[in-house]
Image (cartoon, one colour):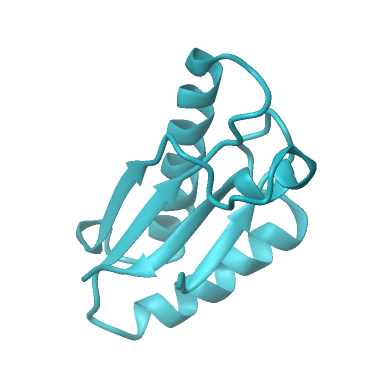
Length: 107
């Protein structure tokens, strides 16, 4: 599973509140290793248009990547991608769990 998951409210790409603390804590762990990481941007597939969802995925993952770099993680160790699927398969009632960026050790 992922090292961490950063969640976002609907139609939001800014990292706020508790999620900022998650990013900061993960950055501290990441700085003290030489591992490479894969960041994946997600958006729920229950709301919005495909164009909006693609932009949300891209902006979310790029925002998390920039925040990690600002906290001292080497940019070259971070690979950012998006995924057009749902992060979970729990359905529309759990759409908020699909609005996220996952951070995992690259394989």
